[in-house]
Length: 517
Image (cartoon, rainbow, N blue to C red; front, top):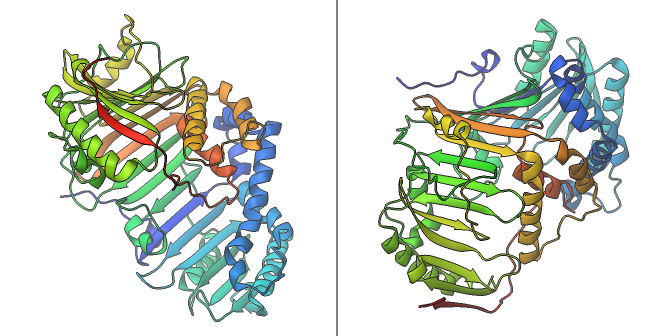
């Protein structure tokens, strides 16, 4: 019998559920004894400046999104929306979304506010929406609640704001708002919109298949139902993510094949994953490269000092023949798909068991054969893997004695962060996209916060026939790569939206075979 996580009690009779989130608020988190380290990382002047810049952008985002439907010259009301974001950060809140496929979804947000702040929300939101829609709001009062409602022509055609007890509830939907009514009833009967948080600061649940009609996901990305919980513990932010697949998953736990001669100290990050063959076999981008057999394991590691010493390795039986097939496939793909995007030349060196991408600034990407006691491997990098006699530490190898471990990642975030920032700057330069400026608000925050970040560890293990649970312990809950992406996103000119694309112009590039050095 397959394991399926039941919906929360209040959702059991009210499908179709799409998503929910419960945040206890920074005020409650600050009073928790497990928040001391996190507060130390988030209370610097640089963190405050980044928060203010981000909130200013978010306050203007609704106007940016909707202005094509507004009369020219309409106020953006950012000054009125900005203080509401402080309340959302500080106070407890609950969000829920429901909707049938191809129908307008219903959204509801409940925020715990005192009377004074509730009045600010009531006035500021009414003023903005009335101006943007050119429709009047109507005062409403019933069943112990009071607020306003706005009816308009385009979906969602009903927006309602009410105060119930110590909470305000803002909802929108089409024609009727049963979710809004239900949350109000919860507040009136239980004093709150959802159960009191017991073991988390933030909890979220998303049914991605149901959400997909209203949210554009990258092509080929199929996400199952996901449950997230995050809370402070032992000086770290502990994040637990459980994914629930619709069917039983046949996890493959063949022995780990770690290329211990190719990987050596001193590491600043190490990642290992197994059980990936079924997923890789479905990826269309891998098909042209004729990888046979499809790898079921992969290893990724980074060295200290040189930013671009990051490598990936996969088991490759009969590696010499596999490298030749890969070279032919790269040459064909380069001529038909990639040549217009890149510079340099691809060089196949069979006598060295290596493929090089020469002519790029700062780096020389390669794919190379490695003969190991654990078997043959193909490994790739952007900078030479300098030889060393320093073996992997026994404490790291001991992590792989567990039979149910599918994924393991460890990094020293303070040391890995500068490497990720250098890598991202190079990528953005090659893609001819704006780089993260050194004097930007996000960069200044990373400069102050990064050196204070310690180890981040992420592990994934099956917790049921159709469940996989990922647990991370990290000072900020994010890895160095994720912090780099976050900083670039926060500084994007179109934040909270973003999109980087490869350049469209043509550069000179060549593919050739080499018979000698």
